[in-house]
Image (cartoon, rainbow, N blue to C red; front, side):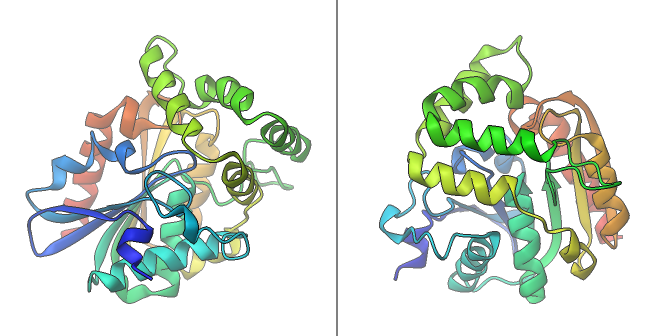
Length: 267
């Protein structure tokens, strides 16, 4: 199998170091168009689509392989191995952040640093843990997704994007969501919202930056604080912005946070 074709891998930029970007649910490589170019003069940039998303090879989608996040993490590791890269900076949004984290735990030689944007190890509240949703809320959300993906998209996109004064961002997200095949969306949505990677957090051994929007419908600030408490060598940057997609709605602030982290991690 051609791994680079499978995941629609795109590379550009220069430099001896590499940076890989892992998108979240319902997105693709285009989600990074405002952020990735800022690092192209110092890094070899690697963008890719999760199987089932964007321009990935849909024939490679296997419900068994992608029944949990480990399948996606293995894909990311395979992409980096195919490119003969090690010690890369991994940047992941939302579930893509947890996928990158799992890949870094399984293959520590592949990553030197991680940037987790709006990432969550668990979306469902659990005892003292605040994930943002009650169990029945997530089940209702997934039932809605199962029954009418198009209607779910129109309802969900404005809430997760935030920034209602910029409707073009919501329209872009709706279009991106609708590019995902409904059957893939149903399974990926279930895998995402029911995932629980809290037990894996102490295993991460590379420095990490947690980028958190101050007002995020999907991932409250308490989740970013939880990650900061449980990830060794982590930094937390709470951006004064709204929405679950600061790399789209507030790219300058997102870039600045990443640049500060990369500079501090070198010292």
